Image (cartoon, rainbow, N blue to C red):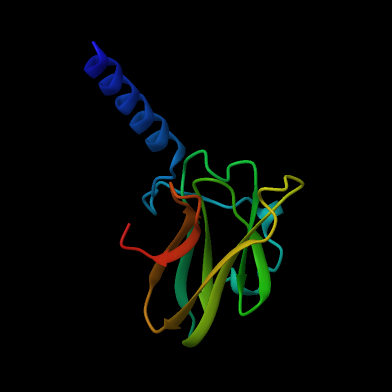
Amino acid sequence: MNMKIAYFAATAAALLLSACSNQPVATGEAKEVPSKQIIDRTLTQSATGTVLTVVKRDSGTKGAFCTATVAVDGKDVAEVGMSEKVSLHLAPGEHIIGARLSNAFPFCAGETAEVTANVSKEAVYRFGVNAGANFYINKTAW
């Protein structure tokens, strides 16, 4: 009887943890951020000599109540919601791509992640909160 209870508790805990962690979204399935969420349009418009770099936010419940702002080289570009992406057109070279969680909720404030990107060809980056409640941004093949 105790084994059944332990098995049930372990299964329930695993389901709860997996439900809380974020999941990657395929780039083709991620929605482009609405125009009203773009803070600075200069990097979202295609231009000769630039390289397409997509930054997308995972789906899931962790961090869902937090506003996420994507920045390039310290300059805010767009607010990105769950399962959304922003398509950036960056000059070739090294750039720092960052994401920051912020909102009125205290658990959102101050969470930041960044990655140094050597932009030479099209690339995709994803960000979110993992099951360990760590905020991250990584290059991805998704």
